[in-house]
Image (cartoon, rainbow, N blue to C red; front, side, top):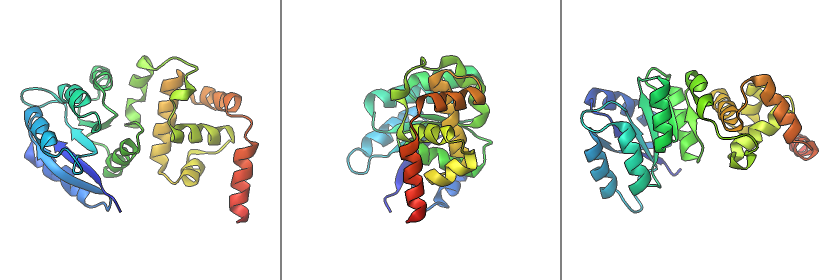
Amino acid sequence: MRKIRLILVDDHPFVRDGVRMRLEATDDIQVVGEAGSVDEAMELAAGLCGPDEPHIALTDISMRGASGIELTGLFQRHFPNIHVLVLSMHNSVEYVKRAVESGAKGYVLKDAPAEELVSAIRTVHAGETFFSPELQPYLEGFAVPAGTSSLLTPKESATLAWLACGYSNKQIARELGMSVRTVETHRLNLRRKLRITGQAELVKYAIDHMLPLKKLQASHAGKEDA
């Protein structure tokens, strides 16, 4: 199994130790470096260029000197292949908004369960975005315009299709091989991108835009018959 290579950026060694222990308990995530500041993170990323380049930088926001938001912008410019995932105690709309505008692919709260952080890392590595469910009210304020379904990721489109079929989060998770929390995140991202405010409106959008669904349902039926 090819592991997800990740660097930790936090100015508290105790925090880094705790996060590293969480991640080392998985089979597919490898911490390849740690940094206590933005300058150290830039130096670390530069030294890991090439085949050992990290896939993800997991960073705090509040650090001595430059912040994790500044790090996000720097990585966006100098290391665009390294996706930045924020892990922070701050749950204010301003922090989330600035992180996203700087190029962060996700934002997880530090008091989130370990499974949520692992799911976020896997989701971001797959090219999608991940935000703690508690942040949903903040994301709706800077959504992209409606009618931009072409901006949806394959997993988001698949989630939308199964919603149109009337499937629950648990059923969708089973069909797509992901956790229920990840499905919730996909639904959150769909509402943000499509500028939809409620769950009922999202289901209606799915029904209106994901038909015909006979091919999807036929494919599902074929899988059951196999």
